[in-house]
Amino acid sequence: MKQLTITFLILICVLFATTIVGAQTNLLIDEKDISKPENWCARGRGEATIEEINGDKVFVVPKDSWFRQDVKVNDAAIGKYALFIGLVSSERAASDKPIPVLPYIYVWIFNPGKAMRGQKLSNDAKSKNEWVVIYGIFPVEKEANLIRFFLYQSESNDASYNDSTRFKNVGLYLFETEEDALKFAKAYK
Image (cartoon, rainbow, N blue to C red):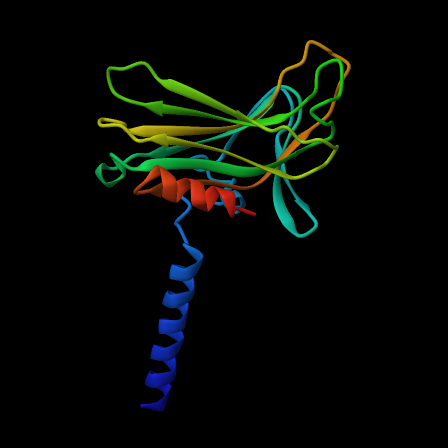
Protein backbone atom coordinates (compact mmCIF):
# COMPACT_ATOMS: atom_id res chain seq x y z
CA MET A 1 0.00 0.00 0.00
CA LYS A 2 2.83 2.38 0.88
CA GLN A 3 4.52 1.71 -2.50
CA LEU A 4 1.25 2.42 -4.33
CA THR A 5 0.81 5.71 -2.45
CA ILE A 6 4.37 6.83 -3.28
CA THR A 7 3.90 5.91 -6.94
CA PHE A 8 0.61 7.81 -7.04
CA LEU A 9 2.21 10.91 -5.48
CA ILE A 10 5.08 10.82 -7.98
CA LEU A 11 2.58 10.56 -10.84
CA ILE A 12 0.61 13.55 -9.51
CA CYS A 13 3.83 15.61 -9.21
CA VAL A 14 4.89 14.77 -12.78
CA LEU A 15 1.47 15.66 -14.17
CA PHE A 16 1.42 18.91 -12.20
CA ALA A 17 4.94 19.85 -13.36
CA THR A 18 4.16 19.25 -17.05
CA THR A 19 1.00 21.33 -16.78
CA ILE A 20 2.87 24.26 -15.22
CA VAL A 21 5.67 24.17 -17.78
CA GLY A 22 3.19 23.87 -20.65
CA ALA A 23 4.83 20.70 -21.91
CA GLN A 24 4.10 19.82 -25.49
CA THR A 25 4.82 16.80 -27.65
CA ASN A 26 7.44 17.39 -30.33
CA LEU A 27 6.11 15.85 -33.55
CA LEU A 28 9.61 15.63 -35.05
CA ILE A 29 11.55 12.44 -34.50
CA ASP A 30 14.63 12.91 -32.36
CA GLU A 31 18.00 13.36 -34.07
CA LYS A 32 19.28 10.22 -32.31
CA ASP A 33 17.13 8.19 -34.73
CA ILE A 34 18.78 9.55 -37.90
CA SER A 35 19.85 6.05 -38.98
CA LYS A 36 16.28 5.22 -39.98
CA PRO A 37 15.42 6.57 -43.46
CA GLU A 38 11.83 7.35 -42.45
CA ASN A 39 13.17 9.81 -39.86
CA TRP A 40 15.70 12.54 -40.65
CA CYS A 41 17.02 12.49 -44.19
CA ALA A 42 20.37 14.19 -44.97
CA ARG A 43 20.90 15.36 -48.55
CA GLY A 44 23.02 17.62 -50.69
CA ARG A 45 26.53 17.83 -52.03
CA GLY A 46 28.11 18.49 -48.63
CA GLU A 47 28.14 16.12 -45.69
CA ALA A 48 25.32 17.02 -43.33
CA THR A 49 26.03 15.31 -40.01
CA ILE A 50 24.99 15.12 -36.41
CA GLU A 51 27.66 15.93 -33.85
CA GLU A 52 27.79 16.24 -30.10
CA ILE A 53 28.75 19.76 -29.00
CA ASN A 54 28.90 20.55 -25.28
CA GLY A 55 26.75 17.51 -24.54
CA ASP A 56 24.02 18.46 -27.05
CA LYS A 57 23.16 16.59 -30.26
CA VAL A 58 23.51 19.19 -33.02
CA PHE A 59 22.64 19.07 -36.73
CA VAL A 60 25.63 20.40 -38.69
CA VAL A 61 24.77 21.63 -42.18
CA PRO A 62 27.67 22.60 -44.47
CA LYS A 63 27.40 24.35 -47.84
CA ASP A 64 25.01 22.70 -50.31
CA SER A 65 23.50 20.33 -47.73
CA TRP A 66 20.33 19.98 -45.70
CA PHE A 67 18.28 17.77 -43.41
CA ARG A 68 14.61 16.99 -43.96
CA GLN A 69 11.84 15.23 -42.10
CA ASP A 70 8.24 14.56 -43.16
CA VAL A 71 5.45 14.58 -40.59
CA LYS A 72 2.06 13.15 -41.51
CA VAL A 73 -0.88 15.32 -40.53
CA ASN A 74 -3.84 13.59 -38.92
CA ASP A 75 -7.38 14.92 -38.56
CA ALA A 76 -6.74 16.01 -34.97
CA ALA A 77 -4.20 18.60 -36.23
CA ILE A 78 -6.63 20.35 -38.60
CA GLY A 79 -7.60 23.79 -37.32
CA LYS A 80 -4.70 23.98 -34.87
CA TYR A 81 -1.62 26.15 -35.07
CA ALA A 82 1.73 24.56 -35.92
CA LEU A 83 4.82 26.04 -34.30
CA PHE A 84 8.11 25.38 -36.11
CA ILE A 85 11.02 26.21 -33.85
CA GLY A 86 14.70 25.60 -33.17
CA LEU A 87 17.95 26.99 -31.87
CA VAL A 88 20.39 27.94 -34.63
CA SER A 89 24.00 29.07 -34.80
CA SER A 90 26.48 30.00 -37.53
CA GLU A 91 30.20 30.48 -37.97
CA ARG A 92 29.37 33.96 -39.31
CA ALA A 93 27.25 36.78 -37.93
CA ALA A 94 24.26 38.30 -39.76
CA SER A 95 26.30 41.46 -40.41
CA ASP A 96 29.24 39.66 -42.07
CA LYS A 97 29.94 40.71 -45.65
CA PRO A 98 29.70 40.14 -48.53
CA ILE A 99 26.94 37.59 -47.87
CA PRO A 100 26.45 35.92 -44.50
CA VAL A 101 26.01 32.18 -44.24
CA LEU A 102 23.04 31.78 -41.94
CA PRO A 103 20.91 28.83 -40.84
CA TYR A 104 17.23 28.79 -41.56
CA ILE A 105 14.21 26.50 -41.29
CA TYR A 106 12.03 26.02 -44.33
CA VAL A 107 8.59 24.44 -44.15
CA TRP A 108 6.16 23.07 -46.73
CA ILE A 109 2.59 22.21 -45.82
CA PHE A 110 1.09 19.89 -48.41
CA ASN A 111 -2.60 19.82 -49.28
CA PRO A 112 -3.91 17.38 -51.91
CA GLY A 113 -4.80 19.15 -55.13
CA LYS A 114 -3.26 22.44 -53.98
CA ALA A 115 0.13 23.99 -54.41
CA MET A 116 2.47 23.61 -51.48
CA ARG A 117 3.16 26.57 -49.27
CA GLY A 118 6.66 27.37 -48.10
CA GLN A 119 7.84 29.43 -45.17
CA LYS A 120 11.44 30.46 -44.54
CA LEU A 121 12.46 31.27 -40.98
CA SER A 122 15.97 32.75 -40.74
CA ASN A 123 18.05 34.06 -37.88
CA ASP A 124 19.67 37.42 -37.23
CA ALA A 125 22.51 36.53 -34.84
CA LYS A 126 24.73 39.51 -34.07
CA SER A 127 27.86 37.47 -33.36
CA LYS A 128 29.55 34.29 -34.57
CA ASN A 129 28.48 31.02 -32.95
CA GLU A 130 25.64 32.75 -31.05
CA TRP A 131 22.64 30.46 -30.46
CA VAL A 132 19.33 32.16 -31.25
CA VAL A 133 15.75 30.90 -31.40
CA ILE A 134 13.89 31.06 -34.70
CA TYR A 135 10.26 30.11 -35.15
CA GLY A 136 7.14 30.44 -37.23
CA ILE A 137 3.48 29.82 -36.43
CA PHE A 138 1.05 28.71 -39.14
CA PRO A 139 -2.51 27.37 -39.22
CA VAL A 140 -2.96 23.73 -40.23
CA GLU A 141 -5.68 24.09 -42.82
CA LYS A 142 -8.35 21.62 -43.84
CA GLU A 143 -7.07 18.79 -46.05
CA ALA A 144 -3.42 19.26 -45.03
CA ASN A 145 -1.81 15.84 -45.09
CA LEU A 146 1.95 16.35 -44.75
CA ILE A 147 4.38 18.84 -43.27
CA ARG A 148 7.95 18.80 -44.62
CA PHE A 149 10.50 20.35 -42.23
CA PHE A 150 13.93 21.40 -43.67
CA LEU A 151 17.13 22.53 -41.95
CA TYR A 152 19.14 24.66 -44.42
CA GLN A 153 21.76 27.35 -44.60
CA SER A 154 21.55 30.42 -46.80
CA GLU A 155 23.16 30.25 -50.21
CA SER A 156 26.01 32.53 -51.15
CA ASN A 157 27.51 33.29 -54.53
CA ASP A 158 30.91 33.32 -52.81
CA ALA A 159 32.33 29.90 -53.73
CA SER A 160 35.20 30.29 -51.27
CA TYR A 161 33.25 29.94 -48.05
CA ASN A 162 33.11 26.58 -46.32
CA ASP A 163 31.23 27.48 -43.15
CA SER A 164 28.66 25.27 -41.48
CA THR A 165 25.49 26.18 -39.67
CA ARG A 166 24.12 24.34 -36.66
CA PHE A 167 20.66 23.45 -35.36
CA LYS A 168 19.52 21.98 -32.05
CA ASN A 169 16.30 21.53 -30.12
CA VAL A 170 14.28 21.69 -33.34
CA GLY A 171 10.59 21.05 -32.98
CA LEU A 172 7.15 20.96 -34.50
CA TYR A 173 4.39 21.52 -31.94
CA LEU A 174 0.62 21.93 -32.25
CA PHE A 175 -1.44 24.44 -30.26
CA GLU A 176 -5.13 25.28 -30.01
CA THR A 177 -4.47 29.01 -30.46
CA GLU A 178 -1.82 31.20 -32.05
CA GLU A 179 -1.39 32.98 -28.71
CA ASP A 180 -0.54 29.69 -26.94
CA ALA A 181 2.05 28.90 -29.62
CA LEU A 182 3.61 32.36 -29.30
CA LYS A 183 3.81 32.07 -25.50
CA PHE A 184 5.59 28.72 -25.86
CA ALA A 185 8.00 30.15 -28.48
CA LYS A 186 8.92 33.18 -26.34
CA ALA A 187 9.93 30.84 -23.45
CA TYR A 188 11.83 28.37 -25.68
CA LYS A 189 15.44 27.51 -24.87
